[in-house]
Length: 156
Image (cartoon, rainbow, N blue to C red; front, side, top):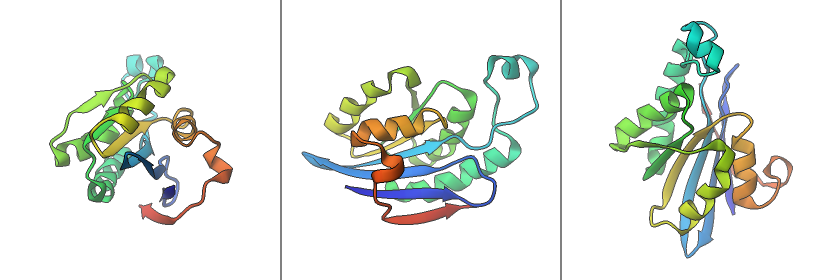
């Protein structure tokens, strides 16, 4: 199983994990934490815990799209939060795809969809407290310490 990490440059709140698995066919699964969220803005959105991306986060989402387009995601998933959807939108637009939402509390439901589905390339945008857990579900082990990093890319 190959893993690549997309590591941040500077004080970035984003990382990625690329995995290939072979269950009938090779799959590329890209897991990304949302870009930087705004710390100011609509009081209602902030109170709900659903802020939009900051201007820096919007720029980073555009750079992410350019970095991820070579993986040609067929399916793009995001949690139903503004910041995750805004992180996914630039690559969805480039790929002419719709962003599909998933429940971060039911991440295990994504595994059979991805591993048994026809599409070969997936992008999943989540959160700092959900993305590592999803990686662990995909690999069926703790990836934080036991998975080998094949290569790194920087998104500045």
